[in-house]
Image 1 (cartoon, one colour):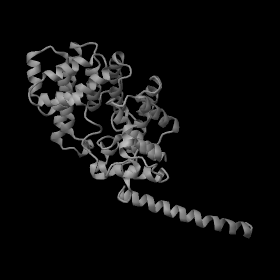
Image 2: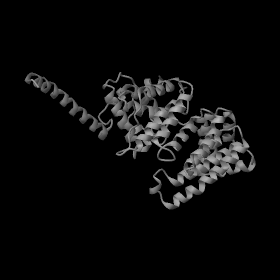
Image 3: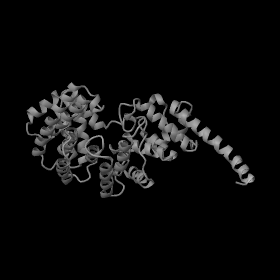
Image 4: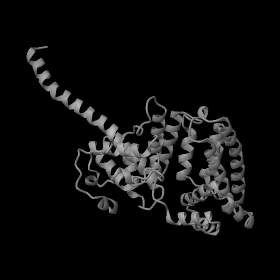
Length: 369
């Protein structure tokens, strides 16, 4: 190589090396400190100490009120809330799951409801899902090999009970997909064969072809850590996302599948999976089109924010972080030992990848947009 070319490469190489070293240093500092040295208010973000890991999104007032009444022994507001959902199946499921979560911890009020209305399909659906929550609480979130034998025994005792209760609920309300959502989640825990799962899935989608929460649960079944593989989960996500109307929140499924695939890899828990620009853009369009009070929206925004950070799209990620705060109790952050720390490091990385320009937007302005 001619000496002059070597000299040019040497001259160019020094700035590149300095830039690479500085970038590595900044990334290491973010991984260690998060936003500790960042003026988060200048980016419309909240201080770290105001982040709340107990919820993934704001409480839904009517559900919170029905749960409060149930805990005080009055099941009637919850019954009225489910009746009011009609055939908005995602809304109904959000309410069923909220009441079932409360019943999984204390079901005396649900027992009163079922005693007074023994053939009420709504009470039956809540009961089935409460049993399922109790089963998963018994098991915990760790790997089966790391779970105590008595907890696994309790898990395997409650799962068939939940499946049976869901079948009874489905008999009482043949048109309702809710019991079938419970069944496909129980099927995952029971590791039912693919053929049997497909039969249950066909029953669910015959009643609600685009059931948001049902699809999320089905994707878990097809993941490698349960009953499928990375290939099967990816195919399910791609086909489901392609089958729904444009600008709908089920476009998040490929992001979910990529995150699940990344979780199986070596090393620390990943921020998110890697997705092509078209898949990320589809989710951006979907969240932009969704009503601001859609209870499904925060679940989608969390994964979208992480995917945007990983893709180097810092400014767009910051918009999602502003709209999510203070709630950080959702995937992917909850896969980390400290969800607040994971969320905070991700938004610090978004600041870095936004070019460090705040745009002088206040938190109030961002949240009123």
